[in-house]
Image 1 (cartoon, rainbow, N blue to C red):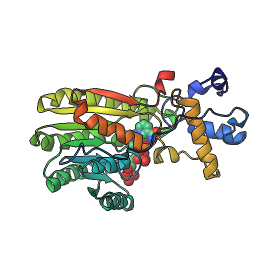
Image 2: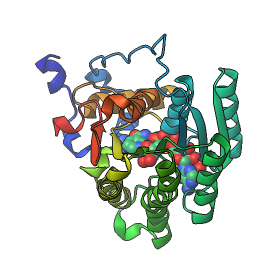
Image 3: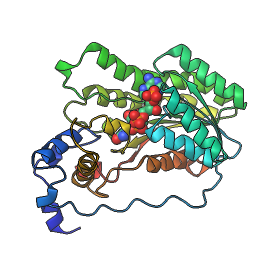
Image 4: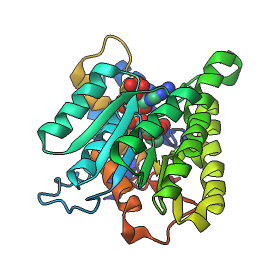
Length: 316
Ligand SMILES: NC(=O)c1ccc[n+]([C@@H]2O[C@H](COP(=O)([O-])OP(=O)(O)OC[C@H]3O[C@@H](n4cnc5c(N)ncnc54)[C@H](OP(=O)(O)O)[C@@H]3O)[C@@H](O)[C@H]2O)c1
């Protein structure tokens, strides 16, 4: 990385801190000049994403893994990866067609997975989903509580309903999942509970008040649950991603721009904001991190958040 590259970055990039929130700003600026135009100051090539492991291990053979929010994005990639490594996977989400598609994809690849429609904001649905997974597969070894949503609005414009929806999905939904996961995990002799937190547990930016507060809540939940259930041989940790190229980011796409412009805007965002690796993560990379944290290799890891952000927070 040369000094010229660093000098080429737009002034004010430091306001584009964690999460996907700077994207619209970046793309809006780019469309005005036009998109991707960093043409006047081309973004340095990002580090390449690694190729998928051609011969995955079977670290989760015989294990039962539950994933919330696996109809798309990080959760989908994690459900697929856990199944590829031998786990029986029970997962949920609200979009039934996508859920059925992920289930079929896993089974077509020789894996075992069952989709259940469940909304993590609803205690009865979470209880029934968790019990269903444990009943169907006979135990519960790993849970990845991943379902999440994001709203970007200054607090004075945010409705109470929008605040509650964010909190109920990202924080209360995690509480509910842990509440119902602990009993079957205890019966199984222990396990691992992971929560998808965010780099926004640790840094924020304008408009992310509800999201950052909800993810900060995850930080507290994870630490407390680790203390409460350590004696039950249950590890609890957060996987805290930096910006990852999923639907959560794509929902910020401005209207009336082409696919190419949007892809260029996202690449520029990564180059401008992820100081070390200069790109957004792929969901498969977050899935790989989740599997690593859930594996016995990390047997002494609990009560903490593991930031996997390509060096974004390191460069603040
Ligand atoms: N992408 C990023 O840059 C980034 C960065 C840091 C952290 N994260 C976190 O990563 C997690 C996964 O997000 P993603 O990036 O993969 O985005 P995504 O593709 O939008 O996935 C979100 C998942 O959560 C599910 N979900 C949302 N609300 C739900 C509800 N009420 N009940 C059940 N499932 C629900 C969605 O399923 P349905 O819509 O079908 O219900 C979907 O499967 C979230 O917790 C997010 O906060 C993402």
